[in-house]
Image (tube, rainbow, N blue to C red; front, side, top):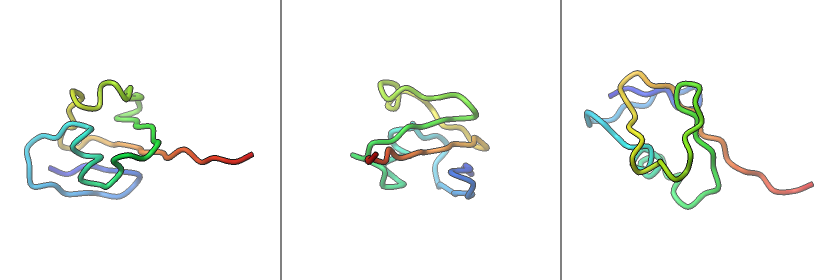
Length: 67
């Protein structure tokens, strides 16, 4: 499976992944982030059910504190 994540092509040796599994693979687990898949925001409550497909484009954005 090939997915574009934050502008970089990533390859995975699986047929499907959930957003939660993808975030774990990319070591984003436990971080304050927002995920957009093909232009649509994925609610955090749906990370475990939302499937990522071959050719999808994801943006993963981290929260930054400060003023």
